[in-house]
Length: 87
Image (tube, rainbow, N blue to C red; front, side):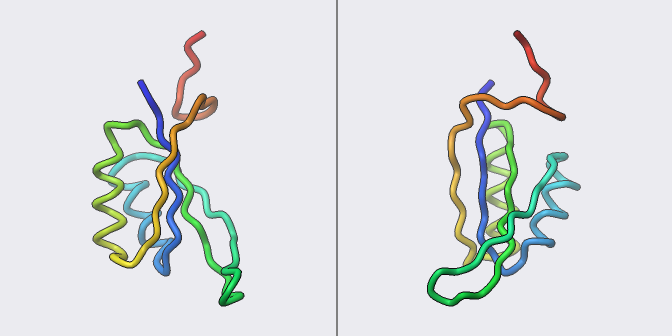
């Protein structure tokens, strides 16, 4: 049961987070960042999801902000709320 780490740089972080929470049932964290070139502050959307949820996340991001920059990474291990530990 693989997990993915999703990070999204967008001008619509709250909208994306709200839909992920409501429609996917995953928690979301905002990470405060700053563009190196523009010096403009940004909220990055950070979320860990099950692989089966990834297509839905991509659709949510695309619908909210077609200009968003999204990275998807493998999570070697996830511990914490929403991801039961099975030793």
